[in-house]
Length: 192
Image 1 (cartoon, rainbow, N blue to C red):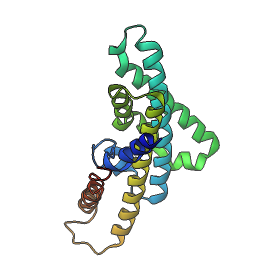
Image 2: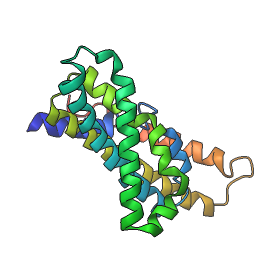
Image 3: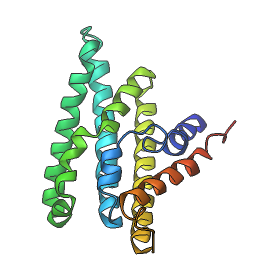
């Protein structure tokens, strides 16, 4: 149990997909303009990350390995991710059409979010068990959602700030992301 908690916290904070591994930067920058959109995107990505990792583990260990087709894992994982995103989009459209409209183009872009594919590949390469894979996915989801929400909140605040013209907009957002990355680096020494 302690090992799983450590895996969850390490994935969420120490090895954060966005700030430490630089994965998922497109939705990080693209959907972080407003806090409500960012939290919605974080939840949708969290669902897709977790469910796609679970399905990828199952397909890899029950189909690809027994048939000696492990070299097809990238293709299989991409198909799984695309199907998961489509299912999420249809579910979101039926449950909350307003949220589906607000997410707009960014929801289908989860398919091309490299963090989702990287999570499945990293979990397989690390030879994690099914439970460890789910915890790893939950940690990555938690970290992604926290960073996305914090960055969106910071961007909303910096838009109201009286910044020099050279820093207004994207430059100030990139400086903010850099400072957040440095702050998350403070977690590196924990647990040792």
